[in-house]
Image (spheres, rainbow, N blue to C red):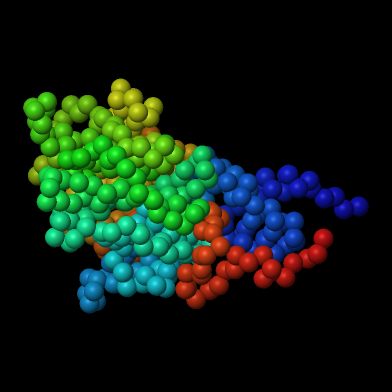
Length: 401
């Protein structure tokens, strides 16, 4: 006598799988296909992967500076605690292969943009891409746009409306006032841009176009110029809430040391500040985590990495992700010899181990990306790579129930 598992149990088992087998299992039956394609399943799959630190991949972009135009190659790699990593080649979305793009990721979607405009959203695991339409607003003359970061972008998830959104902040200098900003928000759900009024951070300088998404908001490090109320320059965190569509400030940690440069990162869903001191032969990287979002007193100094802690003499060390048991931390290390490498750091033993990336020691950047089935809407298209993975349920030859 054959026994059939209840659909609820099957669904729960499927949430534990990575994207590749899930795409194959859509062809098992109509009910399996409907389950895997359902928004509820996709949401539960994302939530479980985040909570268990599973189904994450590294996206590596390797730069070839010998070719004209500084071409880059994309790879993906599974995250585990082995000391060697097998790289699988990825193709950029076909229409963007020659572009120099920045990127952010959120729940498996990668946001591609350049210094001027938002370009596309891309799910490298389902291999679907959606071009972001041009903003309908009139862009200020190039003569008015300030040279320090033409645009700052943020990308994140609006949990209230189940929507992925992009925020763009353009800074320029009009003739009739010292400085102005234009803020616009793109919605994946409606595939439209809207202008946002009332920018409260006039005069602040965004130190990077890059942002970090945590607690429902995008975050940037910004510089607040001297004012009558301040005795010295202030560095703070600017944040944009995607649900309320509001900007606000967050404080930096109270440092006990002097640091030369700060970076924002996210670990275990918490906003972190990486503070670097580049003193000669004494590079030091200190990691702070905001344990309770929004509270200055919740900043906790977690780790300090000094020369000798890692297997290379390093100029910079960037934490990427914890191991599944949270006892190790994967770091991207910028070495003094000029190449970059990956290192697993054992938080209990205080020991580090080199990760062999197919014997590559070169110029590459790393993005941690969650594997997901998050869809890009009806107007998405195949990314142009050689293998085809269909999102069309009717394309599968399934067993009828």
